Amino acid sequence: MTLPSTPDPSAKTPGDFFGRENSYGNGKLWVGGLAPKGVIEADASFIQPDGWIHQKFGWWRASAGDLKITGRRLDGPAAPARSEVPEGYGDTGFQATGVYFPVAGCWEITGRVGPDSLTFVTSVIKTAR
Image 1 (cartoon, rainbow, N blue to C red):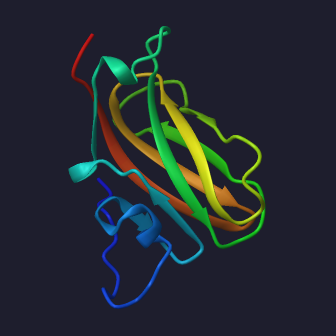
Image 2: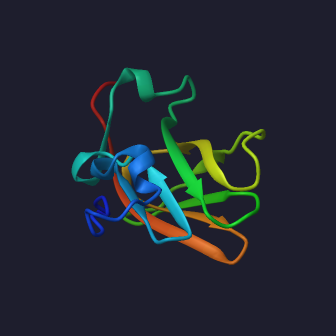
């Protein structure tokens, strides 16, 4: 699982926007909303009527362009994750998003803006039916 980045504590980073305790980044892209210990515990409020599991993530883009998010399950077969990237956030800076997981499992999520990318791994478990 990908755990939050802990860069030089005296350096100001986009991760400060989300809180360093739940963000991860590489200088070009940062993602906030990472679950503690890399595990998303999806209770009933996360589960959509179609059974897919929804999680919100905030992204910070240093590079200009549209954010594209893809996801694939690492520990078994599954349809790819879906993403929702609403318009209206400009070309750089903060971008709200949602990722929809078709099933619980271990997932690799990649965000891309032009040639820049950031990948993290998270585990998704359902805690309610």
